[in-house]
Image 1 (cartoon, rainbow, N blue to C red):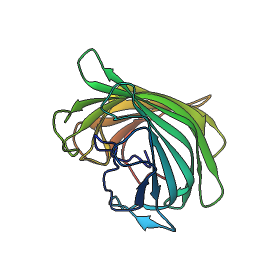
Image 2: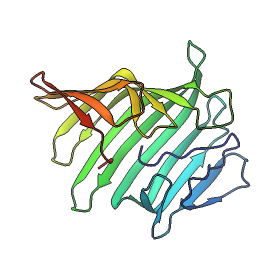
Image 3: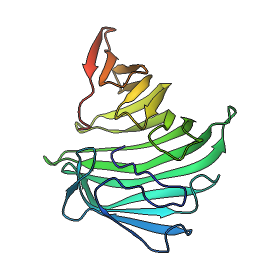
Length: 221
């Protein structure tokens, strides 16, 4: 995600070092509307420049089943790219293994790049917290992610993407550390293997002709 924000159990936004946070109602009460105002631009702890606003509607404490939060951008940019569309995260309770899980629905996401090109997509994924659920710290949290997405890329080509082996994301690492996915259009399919759990930029891509190559994951655009 280009704009995922941590939340404390009381629904307050965890400090990311960029943006002014305000609450429509007293912090920790629900429902509530949180606004993060990045003004004309500031740089967060991950080195990304953000400007504009994010409006975050929260129905209840996210640790409680049934609670949800919806993030809506308002004239919002990340590294010069305009971001539009909503993202809704909903607590669906524990899975069969007892891990706390969430659904994440991305609706009509649109990225408009500085050169005027744009990409759009929607997705439906499931996130389950497999580590760190018993501690207050966020740095030890680990999630698995499954699901699908579809859209149109910057070249106007329709695509479909599917996570074929659950992706593993550590809060302590900026990249996926494990899992597989594939992306296809009408004629081609490319798969990506993110590795065996190590925190690094490396991934292995399998090309349509069956050849494989190691790549380094670059900036998000």
